[in-house]
Structure formats: structure tokens, C-alpha cells
Amino acid sequence: DGGITQSPKYLFRKEGQNVTLSCEQNLNHDAMYWYRQDPGQGLRLIYYSQIVNDFQKGDIAEGYSVSREKKESFPLTVTSAQKNPTAFYLCASRRQVANTGELFFGEGSRLTVL
Amino acid sequence: AQSVTQPDIHITVSEGASLELRCNYSYGATPYLFWYVQSPGQGLQLLLKYFSGDTLVQGIKGFEAEFKRSQSSFNLRKPSVHWSDAAEYFCAVGLTGGGNKLTFGTGTQLKVEL
Image 1 (spheres, chains in turn green, orange):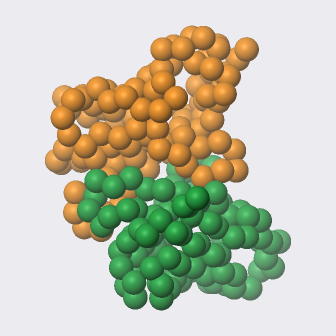
Image 2: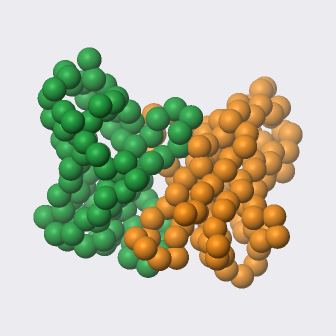
């Protein structure tokens, strides 16, 4: 079945460490997105990519980095510069670059900084 | 910039009762509008979407939503709530340009009393 796979589902990190969250999709979607979810704040866009080898900052990109070397993969690195990284991270993809396409979401990765 | 407001943080209804979740948006043009549902620790699932045409849209699981341009609203409704509808609901608005991003509201947590 086609879908979006995020791993790991749970991740614990010590302060000062970088961590990378994986996002893989087999839907042949062009665009991919990373959102951060905190209680009471909804989803906030971190980075997005509309095409391979290109990506743009979202609303809260500071302390994060991404790459898009393959169409199906869009990993997110949470760097030590992110001051409050504990959150639920959601990866999503869209079938077409045009705005009418719905977002398909993975099941999320929960990062906890100890 | 566009924004989405979900004024109700928590709503509690009895099973079998009707439900209406409110969503208001701020955007200059006619937006693309979405409702998503999220179960605890999971990703988001699309309930329904509005792009154009009939302002009353039907979605999955018996949900519907009505787009009212004059009120800048896109409220979600269900005639009879089931206990399995307990979840968090997010309204989102899509840009018609500039990155094809979705902006999400802060969510409404629905509790269903048996």
C-alpha cells in the first residue's frame, strides 16, 4: 500500500545532539512538507520541498535542516541550535505542486529532549 | 498573510447529539479549505475539502462542511456523533500561490460522552 513512513516513532535525545527524522513516501508525490505540532498550537510549517534538490523555509525553520536528494525522501535534522525541540513532528506530501491537492500525512515522530 | 481561527479549544457532546465545529479564516481571495482529523499519537486524515462550486461539501465518516464567504467560515458538522469521533479536528486553509502551503488552525479537541 502507498503511504508515508516516518521513523523512528519515538526518539530521545540529549541536549546538544543533532538528530535526524526520516520521511519516505511511495506515492510518487512531488511536494513534501515537515510540520511541528505542539499542544494548543496546531501545526507549524518547518520546511517544504516542491521538487528534488530544492526546498524552502517555512515559518519556524530556525534550528532545523533538510535535504531532498530523492523524490521519495525528505529527512529532517533537528540541530542543537533548536532551543525547544521536544515536539511531535509530522511529515506530509502532496500529489501535485498545484495548491488544490490535499496533504497526506505520516504517523509522526515524537522527539523528547532529556 | 492568511490565518485560521478555531475558537473552541475543547468541545464535549453526548453520543447521538449533533456537532458543529467552527472555523474562520482570514484571506483576501477565495481560499482552498480543508478539515482534518487526528487520533492521539497519529497523523492527520482528511475529512473533506472545498475548492469551488457547491458550498456544502460532504466528507468521510458522515461529516459535512459549509463554506460561507460572507462570514469567512467553514464550519464542520455531523448530525449524530459516535463515540469513535472523539479526536482532535483541524481546519486548514491553502494558499493560491507562494509555496502551496497549508496553514492550520490550533485545533478543537472533541470529547464524546456515552
